[in-house]
Amino acid sequence: MASIVGIIWMMTVSLALRNGPGVVVEGRAFFVFGDSLVDNGNNNYLATSARADSPPYGIDYPTHRPTGRFSNGLNIPDIISEKLGIEPTLPYLSPELQGEKLLVGANFASAGVGVLNDTGIQFVNIIRIGQQLEYFAEYQKRVAALIGSEKAKQLVKEALVLITIGGNDFVNNYYLVPFSMRARQYILPDYVSYVISEYKNVLKKLHSLGARRVIVTGTGPLGCVPAELAQRSQDGNCADELQQASVLFNPQLVEMLNGLNSEIGSHVFIAANTNQMHLDFITNPQAFGFVTSKVACCGQGPYNGIGLCTPLSNLCPNRDEYAFWDPFHPTERANRIIVEQILTGTTDYMHPMNLSTILVMDSKA
Ligand SMILES: *[C@@H]1O[C@H](CO)[C@@H](O)[C@H](O)[C@H]1NC(C)=O
Ligand SMILES: *[C@@H]1O[C@H](CO)[C@@H](O)[C@H](O)[C@H]1NC(C)=O
Image (tube, rainbow, N blue to C red; front, top):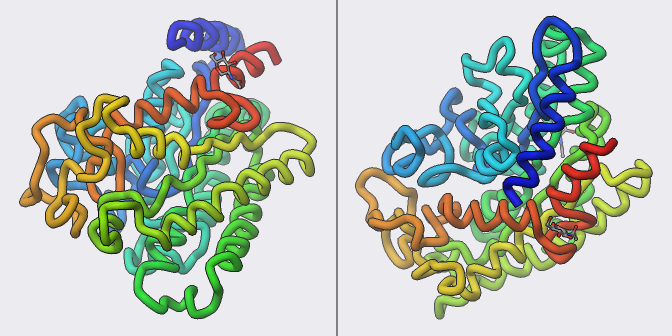
């Protein structure tokens, strides 16, 4: 599969190279929005506690150093870039994101954010989703100054976009503390509808900013992560409340995306069933070469699920044998399984089509 993608990719690149003199636009740009599952370092530039800037984060990254990614190595956007044969996008706040680097795209994600503005307030300074979109508009002005506004529009229109958000609206808001403000205000089904309707506004804004191919991931099985097993599970089974949240949220997200696509009259939004992708290796870790999907590699307490992953935490020797790196985030190996499904999954995983199909379609367009 990688080789087919590679060939399509080379075709796209060679087309782009004939775009004219001046700055060379190489390949397709890639933009990333969302939370810690996809942040690749923005929060390192902010005064916030939501950061992955100390060892052992990054232990399996090429530099073996923490980068701000919530992973032992690469995260989902990195692996998508790798499969597309492009360099990883830089965090939008990185001072290195200048000149031709801008043409690769940018990562606007920020650990701790949700759809709602009051999600993650305990992390103080994070880039809320509205601000991520404002940065995207600012980015486009910078690119227009570099290659002209027509080419800048084209670059955005042809880009691939990934957005991963929503989990924190439950974990770091509704269920953060018992009787949270949102839990007193809404019963769960009504809260889910509210988050979905606000999410729809976010996606409309993204579309109005020029995005035309957007992969939207659902939440994982929120009650099955080591942090929730440690705090809420009696018997090692996934915690009920958070499972209910993902069971309600994910199908409504798909419905909302279908609605948006028919309003727009085009398959702009592609739903990635990350809930099912995770459940596959959570229910049968051995089939994927994991020794466990319950215990985090890095952490402390039951399931290594209490607190944060720090230099003082337990650390497993072989990260490839664990589905979860820290109490909330998958290992690079688990991220690779997820990206493989994004690329080649059936319609149960990717709706209405997978990324390799998109790449073929777009290379013909
Ligand atoms: C969040 O804040 C932004 C900026 O203040 C505002 O435009 C947006 O409507 C708010 N979103 C929600 C869901 O309240
Ligand atoms: C997804 O990708 C694979 C491999 O390219 C392809 O054979 C398959 O038909 C695709 N599935 C869908 C539903 O698009």
